Image (cartoon, rainbow, N blue to C red; front, side, top):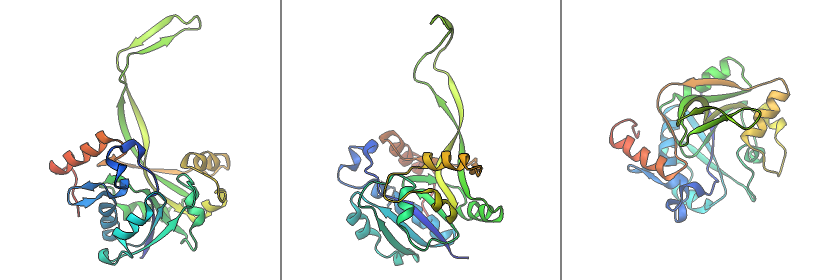
Length: 235
């Protein structure tokens, strides 16, 4: 079955500077290929034949590299924002979305099965499915706990926190477009709050394999190291 993916590739990559001064973040190389090409290759293998790139910043460079997608045996089209619309706002610009489609950030590396994620979403008739990941975060600071008199009641030296985080990979039913306003910024956070308020909360699919969100220079260097150490594959 042919599947559609919307890749959010319009950000300025400010957290990844100075690398993104010249190149848009989706074209930053990981091994022999740009990050976004790695994603497109994996989507193609997973049966996604139609890919829509939501672009804004340095859109012409991205278009020049990926063209119509025929190099990867997929159809690539472009949705251009004339103003920043955050993460979910760009979906309102895209016409003729299928009943179910993938949404993902253009800077995510993972070994998650895109096809299984999509099939589980469709089989369960979910409105919105989030790929989630359990991550341990360590504070860089000693944490003070205070009582009502602002006196120290407990102290934790650089504690760790177990959190379930969004991987930046989602499957959506097109009914979510009813929640998204036109022409104004509307983010993932807005949609999640609105779905909860409406009594139709998102479902979460937990992934236990590899995941890396390349948002900062340290993350980018980690991706290069992981590739060199065969923790991820480019195919």
